[in-house]
Length: 275
Image (cartoon, rainbow, N blue to C red):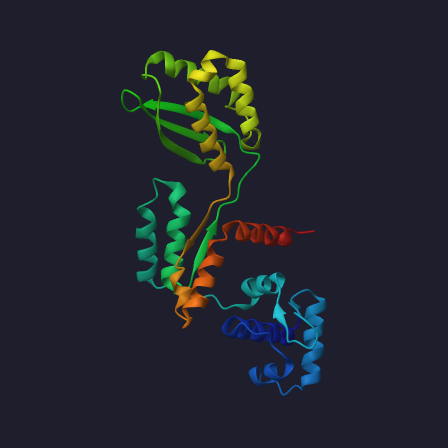
């Protein structure tokens, strides 16, 4: 990109972020002090569209940035700001409180970002489908209460309190441990489906029926490990600009559509991959 194209792209993105409206050549003339005509700016904007940094929602509309446009803006154009020592200390101290529970780290970082910017933020964990189950442990907590802990090869850890239908004893723990070593440990997350669980229970016979609640819970937890986890923080920051209650409610319903957001992020991730 030439310096002029850099400046035009930056002005369009800044205006679009501020207003949410497509930017036309006349509006761009007011934003830039280049002394360029609208026709010249339209040509430059057309070039940026051809390069994949801008797009036109419909004929005769202004331009809006694409994912690639935002990417080059963040990487090459946007001026980075240095955080003050006070903010750095606040961030470090806040994250330190969850340093022993890595699964809580994204959510806490997300909340910090929302608090600092006054904007909504979200985190999305990416599922590693090649990850395998590294360890499954049952830890007795009471006569019929156990702590189920599962660790994958990529470091994800999940735990859950489980109630057993029968008394917890060494035989129960030993049988369950052996079943996990044979049928679960070493298998990829995506392989451990409900159909596979039914196969295990059928092969185990009476033991399978006796341990069905424990095995079912185990597969539920593994299923959670295999799913992308989306966390929103600072949603209320979006509502400050909405005077009508109906608009706020519609926005709230949009935020609840986590599956659509996960799918959208997946599409952007694929777009960002190098050819």
